[in-house]
Amino acid sequence: MKKLQKISLFALLTAALLIPALITSCQIPDTGNGIPDGYGAVKLNIGGISNLRTILPTGVTTSNFLSYKLTFTPSSGDPVIKDVAAASISDAISLVPGTYSLAVIAYTQAGQVAASAAAHYEQTGVSITAGSTTPITIMLSAYNPADEDGNGTFSWNITTTGITGLSVASMKISPILPGGSTEQTISILAAGRPNSSETLTAGYYNLTFDFTATAGTFTFQQTLWIYMALTSSFSITLTDAHFGVTPLVVTLNFNDGATPNQTLNIIPPNSTLTAQGLSLPTPTRTGYSFDGWYSDDTIFSTSFTNTTTVTANIDVYANWIQDGSAQDSSGPDFAAGSIGGTPLTLTYSVDSAAASALTSGGTVTAGINEEVVITITNASSFTGITWTWNNKNLSDPTSMVSGTDNDVLTITDSTGHIKTSAAATYLIFVKAAETGGAPQSTYFTVIVAP
Image (tube, rainbow, N blue to C red):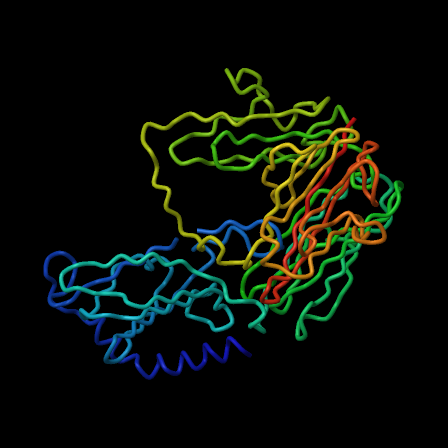
């Protein structure tokens, strides 16, 4: 196996050089500041990730890793190898003064089990000075799934209770690269399958969801990345809205100057989030305590909860109370962008208004006969961009996409499969390949409201 071969060779080398590491760890007279006499030290920190779009591991922190292998290779001499438990990863490590290259492997199991090697980090030019400690921030990256043949996990939670007369709900998992797990189709309606998981070979997959209900048929697509020893999770709530019924929209404004607005769809009217199987998030903010959601953002007098009846589209706002002192914002996470490669970055405008960011799973609301323009701002990083709605290619037969590499989707009241001449809801899927060949995807909802 490709990465296991790498790890095996690495293990043979490190085992052969283990004695110097053991010698390094022996008791040596202390200078009084925690560093042995004549030695310097290094202290490791773990640094952060944010994932949107393509289905891949999210929320990965050091709690996912139970052990680490650290290899310090000096500019001359033998490597120093440390097998470190997760609880000790931030402890100072004593080293002979000099310049080192550092290699880190993070494992999801204790004892450096090869099949659980999920992430890595490398750095050159680590300078160790006698009597002082050198801090290093470890920005872990997951191994590229295309290079692995170990197993990861795909878990899903597909909520369909809001679909009337649902008779068929299936999910097809198809490998994009040779060597992936065998294609399979899973009935989401089968016992235990709406919220379940599968073990899959690391790699890239296409997911196709097919639904048949009273309102007709509906197809939804996504791209899935499976990483060795990690879990890629996906959840979505589908309702009659995705068959053409217009929901009400609850727009969440996080009021923190950083988090984009999020939306929750409510159908039918006069319902609650609880009735939809939805719930309000509980956000966090450094230096502040969260005080709840409110339907006004001035004096925050009207509370909005999961059981508030929604009778019309509504904006709600997070209220924050500043703490007495700022909190430490450092956290043990992956480095931003360390999983998933280059994301598709989208913006949207309605009737030529200023462009706004459009996040994966986000919602764009337009009025009757208004024009909606969705733009991929980093299209030059991709090839083969395609747009679909309900399994309909929006480039054929009537083109709704334009620009270099199909980077612009225009929804109007007069052309194409989807239009704004009548109230409707569209779940639009975008797929592309990074210049290096890795597939990416994202999706969003366009609601045309009267």
